[in-house]
Image 1 (spheres, rainbow, N blue to C red):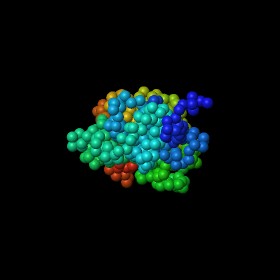
Image 2: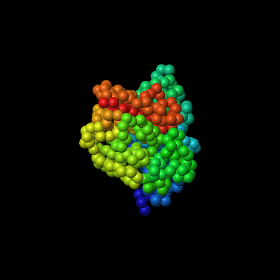
Image 3: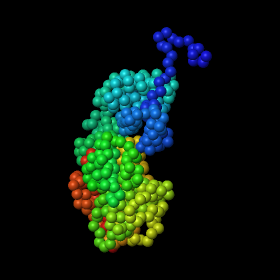
Image 4: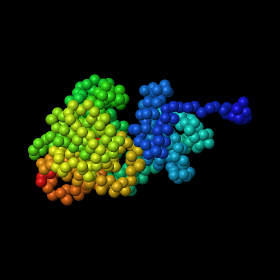
Amino acid sequence: MSEQSRRPRKPGKPYRRPHKDPVRILAFDALRAVDERDAYANLVLPPLLRKAREKGDFDVRDAALATELVYGTLRRQGTYDAIIAACVDRPLREVDPPVLDVLSLGAHQLLGTRIPTHAAVSASVELARVVLGDGRAKFVNAVLRKVAQHDLDGWLATVAPPYDEDPEDHLAVVHSHPRWVVSALWDSLGGGRAGIEDLLEADNERPEVTLVARPGRADPQELLREDAAVPGRWSPYAVRLTEGGEPGAIDAVRESRAGVQDEGSQLVALALAGAPLDGPDEKWLDGCAGPGGKAALLGALAAQRGAVLLAAEKQPHRAGLVARALHGNPGPYQVVAADGTRPPWRPGSFDRVLVDVPCTGLGALRRRPEARWRRRPEDLEGFAPLQRALLRGALDSVRVGGVVGYATCSPHLAETRAVVDDVLKQRPHTELVDARPLLPGVPALGAGPDIQLWPHLHGTDAMYLALIRRTA
């Protein structure tokens, strides 16, 4: 007889083993990986789900719930932290991170889903018993019962500072973004309250899966035969899966004839490919190509014109991802591990050059919600020298009459116009090309000549593109 079975039981409180809920345990494991290893949910979650399906623990509905719990908790983490802080008797920094993860999962079920209150609290307490132990489960139970006393609107009226007193702090709590990110996005938009609220809310929506049918290798009509597939909004090669789905199960994706690619990224590649040139159009360069999505689309477009693409990526393992994305391309291409800040090729070798620079990723917070909590304002200072060096390297690589595309997945002005303006001041023999006519039908592209895409206006990541022609 075990020690536990010999322990006297209190009347009315029979011993029972904690119920192991595979959905919530998986969601907890994913959040711990994000917190402990600085992992990204979009990389951690798929293998966890795949393993659960292989074990027979999950069906489609279980996978959907686990996905919602992970992404919903991460997106609303700032809001839930403010609410939980109002329900505990100590600073949040003194609450152990695993306990805080369970509380956040519970808060999301209570305030961000249609799960009934009693079920949300009960399931969270059971999760705490399994992963934390009985003592901490009691703490979780007490806190979540306080959280359950109000709905989300009620809590926001309590924990968010009034808009009139501190608009940025108000928006930060209500829409779950760090204050500095709210400020930066607001500056980039340059509009009123409605625009910034629409953008912040769009960042908290789960994005659709968007596919690209690579020209000459797949036809969009093939992809449109998939369940719940509809055409893209702007790119002729885009297909949206409106109900999610598993892209890896699609033949064209498995065979690299199609890929998962945000429509904003497709538009950047299409604008560069469509920019008018003075002279030949034979040699293209993707100077910062990893992990290969834009390179694959550019390679397919180049092949249709008889042009050759060179895809360069500094990190060898990322160069391998680029090679995998380009595998099977119908035209000639080459993938090299090379540093775009110190190009190994001769100056003026290329007709078209794309440099999609490393950045804070503030334009893709819908897809990587945890990034908003990891980034710091000082990260901008770290990226700035690299971004300028890559743009200078791209301008060295393009011939006279050729065009460079400078792109970022961040709308932060310090990563977009400030970089372009600074570099072009040192390069008098250059001119900006108006990119807006190269994206016909796409509205609200700004005053030009550069373009800024937005989640709330275009349904894309917040991609930025400036096209620059070398004139001498």
